[in-house]
Length: 282
Image 1 (cartoon, rainbow, N blue to C red):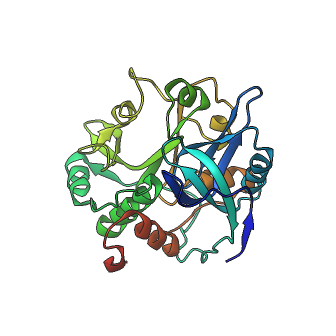
Image 2 (image 1 turned 180 degrees about the vertical axis):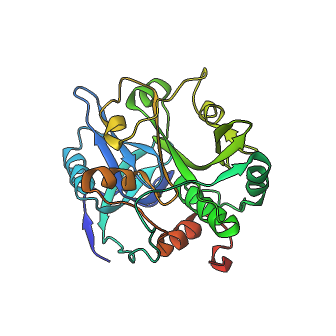
Image 3 (image 1 turned 90 degrees about the horizontal axis):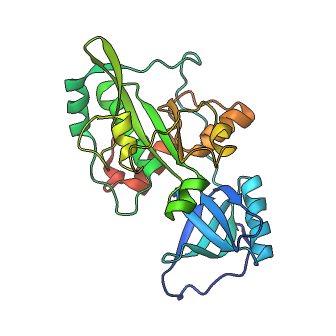
């Protein structure tokens, strides 16, 4: 494993110290602020680094721009980054399965079928599982168990909301399905971690946002990224194949579409998020 020191590493014996392996979604520098916000891609955490530590800040910026995998040494209590190491990026196999074309048509279920499917979803999650890994495992399970093409909904919390509420997360993601209810086709979120059944989209966002805040739905990652002070939150909806915010960013920047299941990613997601992952059948 290639290792390059990016900053002065804290002692591993420091109180509340922990290591976090992640890509960086953003390094946010605000003029006059004493701390820099760092958005951890895999964890969804909002981390902080002393703005006076110019060397560490610059190194983190370079890691973010180059999409490098880093190991962060963080203080769990303060969420401060104490140091970082650059890791060799792990390469994944190409898609083992391709969609026939670029269009994606979600399956429409009855509400009873959606509820039954929700009750079959794996609840054996690990204590520190990451939301995007849980969501990817659940989406694949729905496809594997019932041949259901589901979608994903990402909720992004803006700098405005994070600062006002001292929020520790910058995004959350869950699968959702379409249900036929009367003459309407309805979106129902399938978030086993936070809800008790298929849930209306607004009820799902109310789980995280105060006072019935409406999170506008936007089409592109930059619609969220470039409008941090206009709203408290944004939603982006994608097919079941999109695993993380980085996938949404690369779709816009490089035109990289996720058109099928990547089984290495599924195994990686289940290993991080679910117990007994080694016994899982594909």
